Image 1 (tube, rainbow, N blue to C red):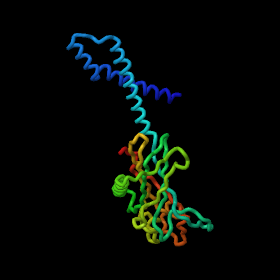
Image 2 (image 1 turned 60 degrees about the horizontal axis):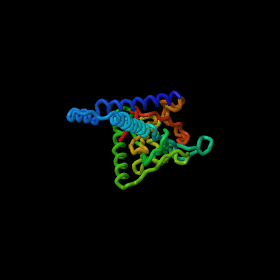
Image 3 (image 1 turned 120 degrees about the vertical axis):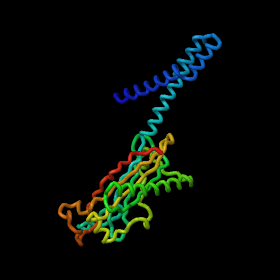
Image 4 (image 1 turned 30 degrees about the horizontal axis):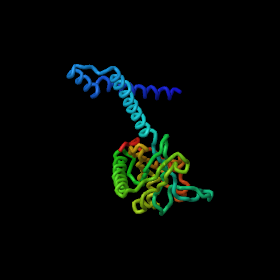
Length: 270
């Protein structure tokens, strides 16, 4: 009830503001004043009533409704993502488990695009990539996200030029998510034993970067960005922290700890 009251007061304030602007400083009011001075006559009260009460109220109501509608369309739909493992390995007991790291295979991740908010997201297209960086500094993160943005812009421009329509994320569970995987194999680093050792010690940092482009039912386009980096693998275990990677380590059962990039990406209006 409090929310409804607040929304009504916001709408009422918008309506009154529009009505006042038309009644006190609008072009119609100005033309009426000039006309009365030029012809030396006043309009009948019925005409005044129709213009100032009926017409201005209708226009003000429409403008207030449009403001609320555009706000609802732009603020009540988001496309967010999270990541999951791609490969299947075996833990120390021989049981099958989903795993992030698989020797002699590309670094990879599964991206799940999810609509949140009250409205549907239309023409959803996403892309995810894996990068390697020397550290977690702000400069490194800027370089990586800038490179990714250039590739993502090229992808979206190509899809738009080809007239390709993306997925629609609606209200049902079936359309709640879109599944994407990392980019082509040739652009993904292969997990060698040497690279695994560097990820273990933190001399190489794996970045998982993604973005989704989507639009609201009202046609407003947005982008939502995602960036995480993998903490050194030895930091996931107190027993191994600061030590070289043991040769018996089963990477399939290695604990993965991801952190948000320093740069926060809110939905960007395009």
